[in-house]
Length: 277
Image (tube, rainbow, N blue to C red; front, side):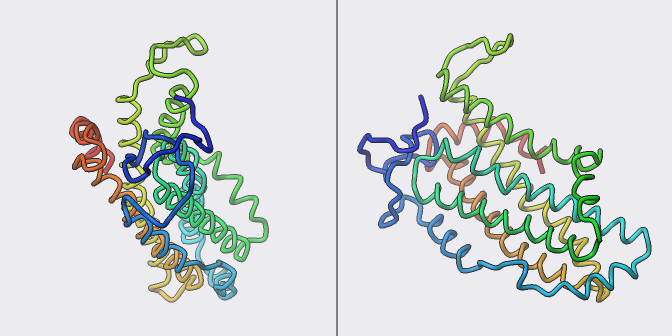
């Protein structure tokens, strides 16, 4: 089933599932199968902000006065946050858009990913303000073993879904030989990868982000790095919205309201879903 950016086959989008139906053709918003995604889009747009609107000039003074171990904690936390939003700024689009079948979900994913890019820009805004050479911070992200371990936990589910989706669109359902290895492509397995990917993202939005936010807020409770905390509050508000989005997708799948087969897959993946959290 090849992906097309504009299907010329006329269809009723209200009858399409969220995923694995006909590719979206006309982006129309006069009707929605699931209006929750339209509400999320409207809410996210109303939240729009820019990091430059937040004054972080005082943070440079605070940072210079921190003891070395607290500087390490603060910068390491920013590196981790940068990693998470680097992944989230691109991965929902790359992984989910080729599989989506309804316009309101398509636009929600695009809106969600765009807001994540604002978060990434925010970390640059913060880091540029407190250190003389931001490159030293950013360059360490891809060489820091502890950060890379965390990256694998998140990116692995995205990468697995993206890889199988590409085989599905290019080769179709069957057993194929790709670069010397046997690849089994079937829709059931692809749906499992989608479900687990969304569950992984749900854990990211619900737990991983907020653990890092707690670290940022701990400094602000001591009246330190308060500009950073103001930005993190704006980011946390966005992430709560993104969490709502993934929870709605998962619940529609889990109860079989959108695609009856997804309810079966949710049961199959229950133990691994627990492990993710």
